[in-house]
Amino acid sequence: MGQLARHEYGLPTQVIPPMWHRHPELLWELSALRQHWLGCYDPQAKPNQALAWHHDFAVSRERLRDWVTTSGTRLDRDRPTRVTPWPGGESENWVEPDASERPVTERTKDFVDFVAEQVAARTAEQDAVIRQVIDAEQERH
Image 1 (spheres, one colour):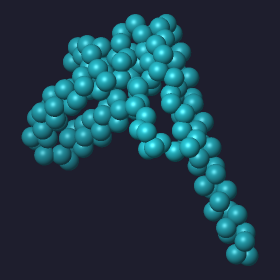
Image 2: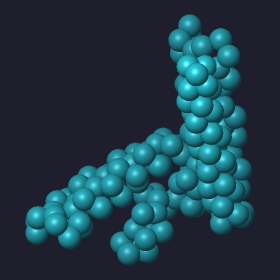
Image 3: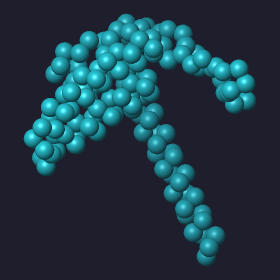
C-alpha cells in the first residue's frame, strides 16, 4: 500500500514518510487501508464500494498526517515514536526507547532488513507455538 499509494495518489512525506515501516502506528493504519481496499475492490464487492474506500482513504490520510506529526519521522531523518512514561504505570523491566534522530540514508536496505527481522520474529514465534503443541501431544502419549 505504501509505495503504490504514494505514487498513484502523489502522497507527500507528511502522509507516508520514507521510514513508515519503522512506526507501528503507521503500519496499523496502512494495514487497515489495505484490508479495506481488498474488500472494496473484490470482484464480488458492491459497485459503490470503491467510492466508500476513497471516502475512508480521505479520512485515513488525515489520521496518517497526525501519526506522522506525532512520530517525528521526516523525509531526511527518522526517530522512533516517543513514548511518555507514566509514573508508576510502567512494568519494572520497561525501558524507555531511544528516541534520538537518525538520518535516512539507506532506506531500501533498511526496509529489506525490517522485513527480514519481521519474518524471522514471526517464524520464531510460530516455531515456538508448534513446539508447544508437539510437546503437549507427546506428554499425552
